[in-house]
Length: 429
Image (cartoon, one colour):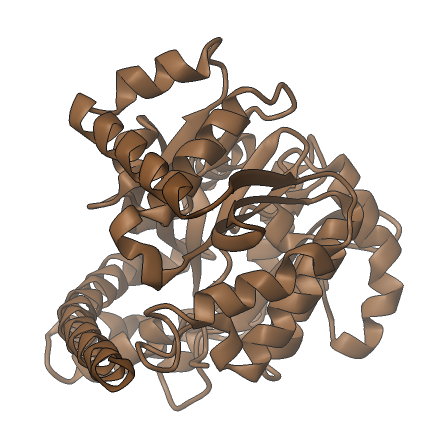
């Protein structure tokens, strides 16, 4: 897997030579103002060998944190680093073992020649949808001061912070701290993710209000046609349980669809590292009661599933899979609608983050509330303020090019997948 955050380094490396931004960046990077300062040891890097010593502190911070984030809890983050990061990412203890302020995974944007070494990033992998750090309640300003001072002392000029939720106490504290310290920051990109606010007294009334009459009629028609094929059952896996009840079924279901080997080959089961990550996280989250799984079954066989992670009343959607052979009956839509109904009837759930930008998707219509999430670029010191604007422009230009290229490649993959299915149908026919 490509190094997370490498797009920032690529953008600078590729675009500097083709733009005038280097005229802005170079003087700031080469003046005496960037001489290395003494490191204050406010941040302790804990390599994998030292992680057992971190575990009790990490668990305490999970319980004491001002904001919950299952993606940065030990059971989810350690398997991610083990399978996706190589030797780049490390869990950072901010503060000290005696007085821990918070934990955060950090990684260099890229290893390479000047000017890539002056940027670090909050580490993000493709299956992580929230980078809100686990910070002791009331210590947000101390945490940020220690983190940014330590990075600046290590000659890091910019901090790339992707996928940060903006509706949290921590984000409020972050922007307040940056203003008070005079530190520049820019938003590289912001999306509004669909959010299910589970404060509705009647689930059926909510669905009638949010879905069009045409959509509701189609949903009921698909449900009836599915029942004509056999016994339809909607199951919920919640609380402490054994992930074996659904983990293998989900991997198989996803791999048989368009994400499988005959399609885009992006299914979890297509990559050994991704499969190991999912199995480890599924097992640990189910044991702790942090997994919430909805399964739509036909004669006891799952035809659509959603896997979600939770912390208390807050839930983050993770993965959805459905049986492509029943695509004309929209089992993926059915499981999402039934999952919405179940969540609205569950008093233990406060909200569910769809973890998708909502563009051209069912969730955009089904869940009308929104959760703002942004990618930020932050100066670690006032002397680095002049770097933020040109670096942000470079990243935005690179992302635009990458997005257009990605759309073209996805279109090609889908055409190939349809052609492969057609050939299989002709052979079996």
